[in-house]
Each structure stands twice: as C-alpha cells, then as structure tokens.
View (cartoon, helix red, strand yellow):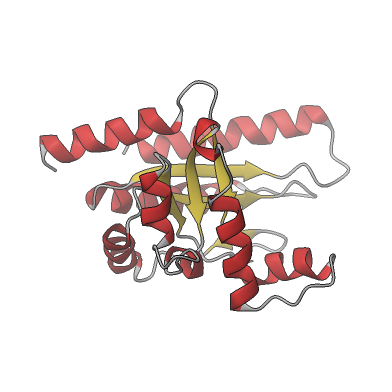
Length: 211
C-alpha cells in the first residue's frame, strides 16, 4: 500500500470523527425502510426512497453537523433531483460518502441461537466498484446476541474473523473500514452479563485485527 493511500485514509478517518460532528446512517435495507414508510402510509418504491434520500442529503446546514453518510447499495447508485450522483452531491458539501458492505445475518451453522453476518463472498470486487462510485469508507455490522449459552467462543471467533477480513479488504483498496461488533441490548440478561460479553467480543475482535 502506497504512502499516499495511507495518508488519504488517515485524513478520511480524522475527518469522520471531527469534533461536533457525527455520521449519518442512511443504509437501511429494503425491509427496514419498508417498515418505516409503512408507518406513515407510504409505499417503498425506488422513487420514494430516492426522494427521501434527496431530502436528507440536501438539508440546509447538514455539513455543519454531519461528517459522513453511510449509504446502501441502491443509494450509492442513485442521484439527486438535479441528476448529481449522491456521492458527488455529498462530497461537494464536504460530507464523506461511505457504504454498508455486509449483507445481513443468517443462522450460524452448528451453533443454535447464534447468527453470522454475510457478505465476504465477492467483497473485493464490490469494494473496488464502490470506490469508483465515490465511497471513501465502509461499514460492516456484526450482531452478537446474549442468551442461554450464547454467545459461544466459536461464534465470537467467526464474527471477529469476518470483521478483520472485511477491514483488510477495505484498506486494500483505500477505503476506511468502520468495524462494528454490536452486542444487542435485547433480552433479559443483566448489565453484568452485557459487560462480560462486550469484553469478550472486543478482545476477540482486536486479536483478529492485530493478526
């Protein structure tokens, strides 16, 4: 990796965490955004989704509070009402375009009650395309639930390994990875159990990232 690429990624990472600013997650999957539209009696069509995104991204003063926006695969290919691609529109306002690259969860084979995040297959090629479309950072979310006998050490290792591979592949093409191991609050577990699982999760993830 060239020094210029490393310097560019470092500049992007610093800009994303600029004081007083946050990252807007506009990466809802089709099922998720459909639920939100349904709650206001609106059909989830591509045209409606584009209009909604355009409303968000053209909000006056947005750049004063938002450093980056996480886009969905559909959204990074869409454009504003004036025909400007959304990544270009955001970049012109000083907002860094990003992209969610995981493809949701599925049950983890051989480990009842646990799920694994998918999306590593073909990721290198997708990342290259996203870079060409204007993305400068990526996000991968691992979902860790707490319940009877879960998470297992095996489940945490699977999540940690996937997160580390995602991060390495992102950096390979000059994209800053946001590594998101999310320990869910849902359940009847105690705060002490949440602390214990969070600690195990972070230890597993940092161990894999350090490889």
